[in-house]
Amino acid sequence: MIANDPNLDRRLDRRAAMRTLLENRGDLLLVTGLGSTTWDVAAAGDDDRNFYLWGAMGGAAMVGLGLAIARPDRRVLVVTGDGEMLMGLGSLATIGVQRPPNLAVAVFDNGRYGETGMQASHTAESVELVGVAHACGFKETFDIIDETGLRDFAAQVHKATTTLFARIAIRADEPPRVLPPRDGVFLKTRFRRAIDAE
Amino acid sequence: MSEQRKAETPDWRDEIFAALKAAEIRQVGYVPDAGHARLIELCRDDPEMRAVPLTTEEEGVALAAGAWLGGQRAALLMQSSGVGNCINMLSLTQNCRFPMPMLIAMRGEWAEFNPWQVPMGSKTRAALELCDVLVYRVERAEEAAETVAAALDIAFNGDLATAVLLSQRLIGAKRWVK
Image 1 (spheres, rainbow over the protein chains, first blue to last red):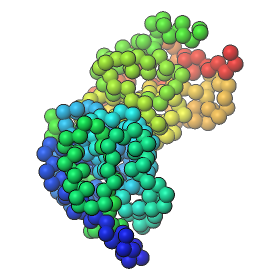
Image 2 (image 1 turned 90 degrees about the vertical axis):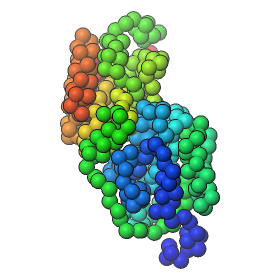
Image 3 (image 1 turned 30 degrees about the vertical axis):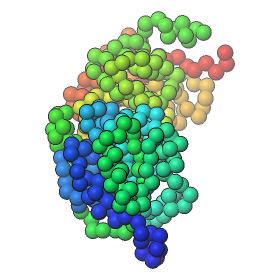
């Protein structure tokens, strides 16, 4: 049913979108939310500077905020899904108040809860995340529906002067899972070592 | 007015702030609370600290995890009713062993006027302990600073979650009718 919807079919491929975001990552620090965005990053290639949330749903953007405040010398990108972002919607209000210039929050939006059976999320109905971010005080927001927009955002992540928010429309499909390490202590320690915080 | 006069006199709240400074806390997540009002004000005014107001307490658990990933120390200030909001997010702290010191202003106990505070207030310690948080409690002003300092020490020395419950008797029950 989803595959037959022509509007959804034109959306970006999630794995390709993640590769594009990380293509010229430089010294970018990456946080991903519970679910498919973590598998997407693993498929693009595991890295010590990636921190994956395997739980703590709703927490990805706030982990990114704490990290961005702690390391103003580094760029921080959070990539999470629409369901994970909706669970932490209040964190957009919190981040909208703080707005560290080195933070970007990107939401892969397929309007579905991919890990639990592709049930519709609120973004498939009435909720429009870019509008939420804008209303929360984000000064630069991106509603991305194609490769050009994605590449523009990927470049802005490295030179923005305010916190960015991007909603990236992706196809509601389920590529094969690629799983990164899931030992939390290991992920924490290797991340801190990689950026000389340990 | 009497509240304001009290806040201007250095007291246990200022000593707790000094303990946060001594432990090199750089990020302080908080949900506004009358019991923490003075401490929040001190943190907000300190140029070395980033005080981050939260919409819900669990945001602060994730904030502290991010801070630690980047090499900064964070603490979380909340009211006892906020502990219930943190439970699932504390799985982040437990799985990754992030240091997570929390200062909790108690409600729903000593001379509480509002019965709606009682259910969570009476289960605060148990809820924290279910989540493997080490819990300390302060009843007397002279114990406040040393207890907070000890909870900060063990959190960062042991990569542990700790909580200091500041009793409602210590803070003073909220005055509803002035």
